[in-house]
Length: 371
Length: 98
Image 1 (tube, chains in turn orange, brown):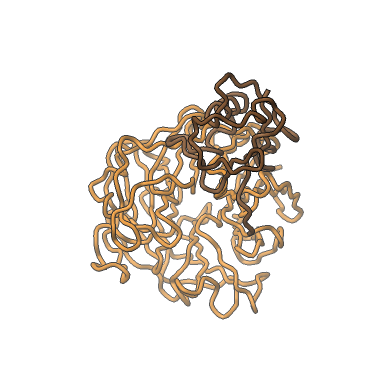
Image 2 (cartoon, chains in turn green, blue):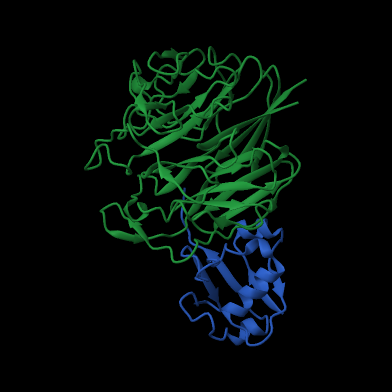
């Protein structure tokens, strides 16, 4: 019988939630790395027992942990993230030049085919790759040395590379997103990069349609249609049907189009999920009601999903990497909140139950569907 | 032998209890102690000093013999009581909540 393993990164450690395909009874393991911030952990699609975790604190910096047994035991691996060459400067919040400084790893993306190859998105924004199981890291510096690099500015959370999407149909194609530079794509395995922000409009930059400078919060794709991308921007939910060459807004009837998380149903490429957040100055759901919104039409038309979710006095946030889906039938959807709840839906979002209620603030949620 | 006292998170990471005792070749300095520590416990690389700049991480301090040595040169000799193991070399995390 299939199983699911939910990997949860929090402000104070990692947790692993396990269930069978019914997704009713859960075993909770953790905290792993108690007291440390776990921005992200993710399993290798090529070897599900190979897990990687990004562990950091302001005191002791960045560590990367690796597990070979599905998270039962962990081993610290390479944590040297050295920018290639002279790093130079990006823009600070006030527009002045600021030296590139490594701060932390926001996102780990294991290769689809090789357990030893993994990508890391870091702050200050850069993309690193390891081909030896995270023992050593090399920067794919063609991204940071893109001509626009000196003009990149941090979002409120820092100048972070937080989204990495590997194209299942083309190993040389990778999409990434940076707050607040925007989205980029490589078609040659990371040597050269192109900004893919045409169609985005951001009123908080001098030229709202500039090539770079957009605060992209997250991007999702369905593996069967890697040219179709869905984006939750700072404001606006967007869609591209041409691998990011152009975007159109699909916010439609959402109560607010601000938010962080976005994901795609495992079996229905036109079914997408977002969690609307009131505004950029009030990071909680509108009206104190926690609702996931689902579109079965690839955007524009949205329905609220609230069964089992708190519908009064709820003022949590759902961060950009804190939503994921399993590949069971029916598709399971999961998200974690800054209030420490992890909610699961075993019916594609129709109803929700809390798996845990009182974890530290949840930073990331990933799901593995196991045979 | 040099005695080193690590903060709790680094003791967990290095899988040690209490103090660490290290063989350190003279001259005994912050740098030579940290290099011996990182050689014995490679998982600590980058957690006490930045791997690229080799600078002490800003939220950590180095104490010994009731003195704050954090701003001493990494190549200054450590006090004799540390060299003779009468006193530990203390690596301390800044006190902060949250």
